[in-house]
Length: 364
Image 1 (cartoon, rainbow, N blue to C red):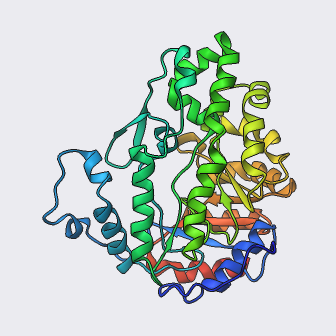
Image 2 (cartoon, rainbow, N blue to C red):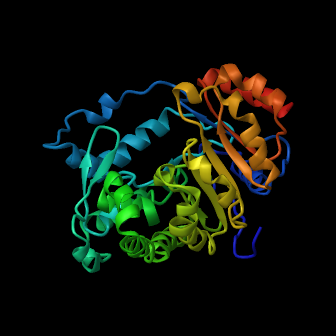
């Protein structure tokens, strides 16, 4: 552990085993095991009704519901009351306006749906490129700040507060241009693409450090949607757009930005979303600052996880840890084929089944 990462038990009411869980996480970052591999549960614990939180509340639009700070925190805290956080499943509220909010900091509007939002691309003319500026008074930037401070005021000894989902670089550029148009741009306007990727990346560390410093001043860890904390700076680099470009294009247009993103971070877990992005795994594995890969195998023909065992072993052999989603019915077969070092299991299971799962994994 780096000297600037003060190890501390922050005293979460629902995580009396917090310190031991964090020791397992830190061992996992380094492909080591203390007593068992880390486990994160989802779809967990007692049923709760969102209707109780929705009572007497209504909004003219979906965006208004997403932007209702009290509602977002009330809903999370309602879930919190009905949840037991077994193993390395941590209670975390992270401000969320959707996966493309980073682009919205530059003036893009987001279209809201029930469970996500997406950018309404507005860069139709390259002549507007120089007008793209980070705006600290942008309503999206200020709303993320508001959500962060509001949660910090309410979280004491109950839950962690994390930072929002940040996607700079080529994914941000795709949100500006529209992914289909950006594919054409690679062929027709490659120099303009590079300029846009630079603009989409240059403020990343300022934005990250801005929110990280707010959290650190309130005795918080570094954590976001993946739920894997760090006492230093934890980042989730990604490049979903990479599924549409060649390895050579990835190396030229994308790789330098990722290398810049990860350098100052204490821990980096690359979000590798599907077999299209996996075409570039050799470039990603060669980045020394990346500690781990979150492998998202997809659905349909990309299930079950067992077909990806050789790929996961390749990641382990490169000295990287792996976050892997394993369905309960395939857990025994997966355990039988894999070396546990560097594995973090994500398992959807009911509360009543979780203690037995933990005991079984401890024997691995």
